[in-house]
Length: 252
Image (cartoon, rainbow, N blue to C red; front, side, top):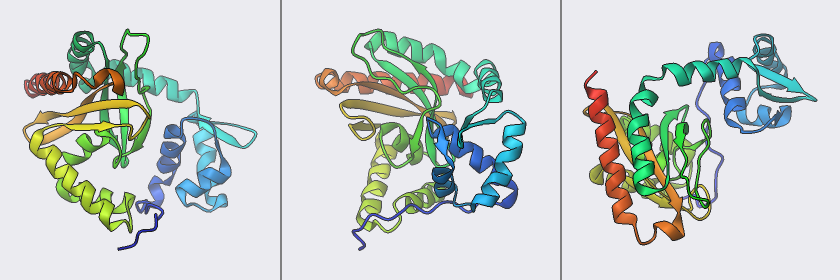
């Protein structure tokens, strides 16, 4: 077993898709990204990177200032269009609102995008001390309740491939995560505390378009100190809300 942390292996990207890869890295970075960091994360030579950035800038998908890159103005239009047409979001929102009101905690809708779990929608708690996961934020599929609930319900071969890439060389961690994913599939939900943000407890349950075909998950997140005495209640309410969303989706 190799105990040293290894750099995750990036998926092989076709030449025709490299511009999309560059755009996705910029979109999920969360702040303007320097060329040096962009080169590191994409694995592209600098000359190739600039060649792909040029049309992205031209079309307004990316903007640049002082050699730092960020999503461009066209991204706002794309986000607006998504919010107004997303079938999953529109069907999940009523249950998310009800769950947030019932439990007094924040609720997010999460999906898998390019080996990451990404927040599509968020209903924030009205309490002054609350946890939130902003729309568009993402992190690797191997960390946190949201990620693991989504990862556990991907096709097994796909999930195993992602685990191998993200935990490359960490044999014990791979075995531990695979056992955890099997348990999540069996019990129907994932729970974590402090894996993504310190002091945050979360429970996540999968949402299905059809039996066996998961499209994402809903996650209830709360300050760990406040969730301590209510975990069973919060888990049950979240699983129930996910089932109601799945039932609504299956009717269409």
